[in-house]
Length: 270
Image (cartoon, rainbow, N blue to C red; front, side, top):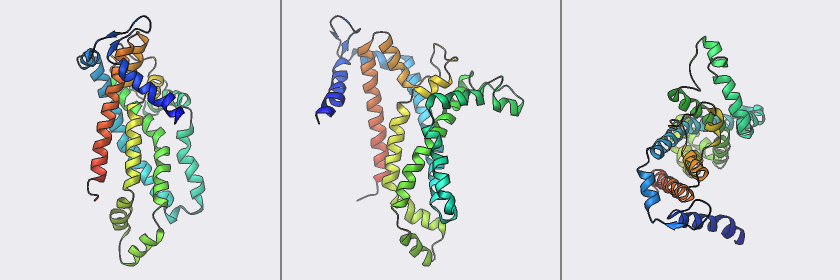
């Protein structure tokens, strides 16, 4: 409890208080009330960065959740057999790869002039230089890295569903699709909830992947920068009050998104 208060609760409360001050890191802090929040809401770059983060969340969320669940179903099925012990580490491998190494590999794959994909296609698609392509390249990287993690979460959820339940349904004439729709999916709701919430929180905190992958191609307008860049840049510029306010706006967005997901996934529970 002491550790929690010292390293988690106190910094959070301190940053909340700091968001109402103008503070450059030295000297006295000046009370400005909600001015930091007002400035951010009128700051075009904040909306760009927030929009980029929402884009990364939505379009990495769909393939990550879908493919990881399908892979978990496939590995859990009887057809996987003895190969199950091989499939698990292979699928989880991207998650344990260092972010720096993964990003550098993707730079080699998606490079414009000597990239593997462009060499195969015989074209020069600007995956890492055109903002429209750059954002999709980040989505591919985030999805690739995330599938292994959520595969483990879904596989853990599937193991809690007794085979006797699905076998009994099959004996009663239920097809595999009916088993999935009427038994597996409803019983997986708590697991889906955990996966969706952790994915939302993780997506809105992304920083390393896009900054490493696109390091040499960012422009001052921050057309592809995630929201965390705004906080880091504010701190680098000595605007600690602004950075704290930006952080709490992010907390509010994640909280709203989490509540929506809880409502959607748990809306029919009594």
